[in-house]
Each structure stands twice: as C-alpha cells, then as structure tokens.
Image 1 (cartoon, rainbow, N blue to C red):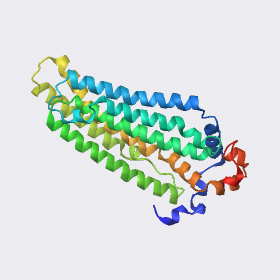
Image 2 (image 1 turned 90 degrees about the horizontal axis):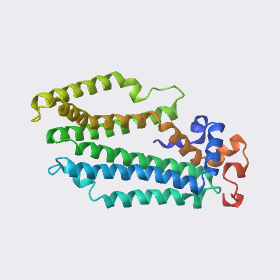
Image 3 (image 1 turned 60 degrees about the vertical axis):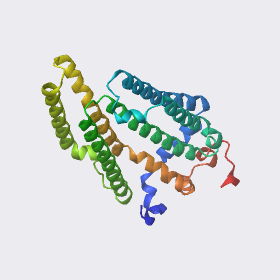
Image 4 (image 1 turned 120 degrees about the horizontal axis):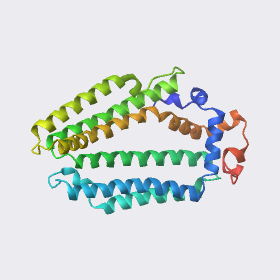
Length: 267
C-alpha cells in the first residue's frame, strides 16, 4: 500500500460508528466459553478433513498420489489445529475488556488463517480422489493461478476501496459468465474422458468418478468468494490503526470503546 493511504483523513469515511460499536460490543461479550466453542468448531473441521484424507489414502488408489504426503501423518494436522484452538481460546486473556478492538482484529486474522487452512486441506483432499496424474497436475496449476488471481484482484479492490467512494464490483460479479462457462467446459471434458476412456464400463461408477474429478474445481472456485468479504477486515485494520482518532471522532467513552477493564493511562 502507498504511504499516503495511512493518513486518517483518507480512511475515516470507510468506518461507521455503528460498525465500530458493534465490534466493541461483540468483543466485550466474546467470553472464554464462546471462544472455546468457536475454536472447537473450526478445529474439528480441520481434523475432519484430515481423517477423510486418511480414509481416501487407504481406500482409493493413492499409492502413486503425491498429495498423500501432505496430509500424513494425521498428527501434524492435530497439532496444527490444537495450536490454532489454544491461540483463540487464550487470546481474550490479553485483549478482552482491555482492548476490544484488538481482539476483533485478532479474531478476524485467526478466522482468515483457519479458512485458508481449510481451503488448502480441502484442495489436497480433492486431489486424493484423482487417479489420473495429468488431471492432478492440471488442477494444481489451476489452484496456483486461482490463488494469484485472488491476491491480484483483492489488492486492486482494496486500493479502489480506500482511494475512491465509487462502488466496485467484485471479481465474481464481473467475470461470473466466463467462470461459469469455463467450469462447464471443464466438466464436459471430464465427463467425456471418464465415460469413453475409463477402464470401468459401469455408467454408475463412471458418473461417481465424474463427480469426484469435478470436486477440485469446486474447491478452486470457492476461493474467489474472498474477493467479496475483504472489506470488513480492511475496516477493522484501520479502526485499530487509528483507534484513538476514530474514538474522538465518534465521541465514545474509553470504557465503551476499549473495554470495561481499560485504564486510560495505558494509551
């Protein structure tokens, strides 16, 4: 980002008082019990993806699948998800009711990391179902290209969001027809390949194979929804970066803004 973007006058209009107070209130009420529930829910998702991956390695022809090494052993995923769980559960000790805005930003970052982890693991899982190596290579290239497009488009959207009040369309809205047609063509090619070149002639099994081979494309496409949800994180970032400036602008008391246990001398 350019340095002039970090001036308060450039970003003060993107954050409303309602948004700021809602963040403060949610963080104030984000108790240990609630953090544990959220942590358990998302950690369980990662573990579930890991266990399904182990099942796929065992029951599918994955002896030559290079992706099997990325999810084995399962203990790696367990340790990783446990670290993320403990990080969220104990984050409130440092921030809750002392600096609620920092807790909001920390929670947003934690959620981004958790979603990115689930996204990558889901793609690895989908690749374990692909028995044809050339298709795995093709989907891997598509995955990398998709990540680069998401980064490029998000960076562009952030710049437009901060430098202009003009309402911009996200990547999906602008290019949905192209994405839809592209996925349809890939699906058709995959279906034709499965029906005419599969060693198993049973149509039912071939149809199941088609659905499995289409699974990686669904995972890749789902990543583009990030280009539609970046605004809340940007607002939280600048709300923390110019915390005191926004507090004075909205004329909010210290105890409401930072938390019931906040001490003014900590500024």
